[in-house]
Image (tube, rainbow, N blue to C red):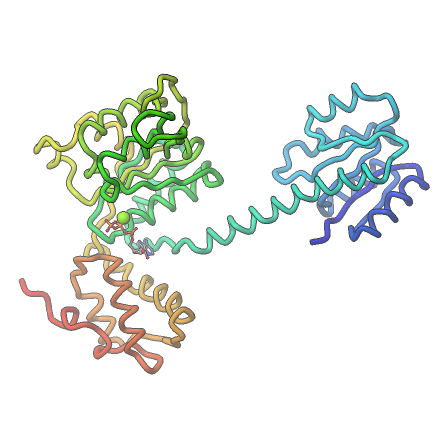
Length: 392
Ligand SMILES: Nc1ncnc2c1ncn2[C@@H]1O[C@H](COP(=O)(O)OP(=O)(O)OP(=O)(O)O)[C@@H](O)[C@H]1O
Ligand SMILES: [Mg+2]
């Protein structure tokens, strides 16, 4: 990658020397002699790195630090200071400058400093790229029915306010997809999203998974381990299948959420975290409470916002769009070229009761794509239970 460097220096010789040197190192360099021209350049585009003289004919270089302070991707700024102006340089560093170089500039130092700045720029590009890639991986959240639209609106508010959310719904209705969507919609999108499936983790290790442990807490605990709650700090902890959490663990979780703090297993220090908790369940938690398997106080703590995903049979208007999405996703992956679904096949899909909800629909379309040799999915490509009219 070649970085673009803007040099702002009124001394022609110095500017040209630096510029030639950096160009020879493979950088793209633009040189300007005044603050006004630097501002003009910054209005039109953003250099990757800014090399800035302090005393300029039309003003004070570091004022650009303030002017760019609010930019989300401000380029690293390297100041060129007069000999002995260390106090000013330290101030500037506190103000967000990346580095400073004293005149007369040592080219070896210049190269090192620019190289470090470039590493930051590369890392940012990489992260931005990863974030984009992640966003594209996320299935689009289909919601055409009025109930789903209202639900998503509430989810958006919960995301913005960072409050606890309980997501309920039958298996395959998209609880995990919704949790991911809340993460993407809210202010924590760039912070961790840590999911833990309470049903898949042994009761005995759930506590140390969640809260971590200190060295020597139990046999085999050789080194301190950070818990997922700590890893999720600043972001979101998604507790999937919360109804499987053992009741004594529920009490500890409730305390951690209430106090926004917890202790590692075997530890005495309170560890404070800022975590938004999302929980999901496909079981009726009220019934679990009645049976003594779930704590009522935890339920109320979790469902500050209660999001219910209706089963697919109650939002059939979502089916055509979901079918379209699954076909588009499958085609490249399965080397297929499905373009359409016959009317009678779509009618069958619309009439089915979908006990496995969206996951079942996705599997049915995948199977049909496999069986279909031409461009249109038809009745013979659908499984038998979908072709039977519902028995009632
Ligand atoms: N709104 C949606 N838009 C597009 N695809 C969706 C949507 N909701 C769910 N899906 C698809 O359905 C599948 C099942 O969703 P998910 O795993 O989130 O369900 P779940 O409610 O967590 O199920 P379970 O209770 O079995 O864990 C996902 O892999 C995804 O492909
Ligand atoms: Mg799930």
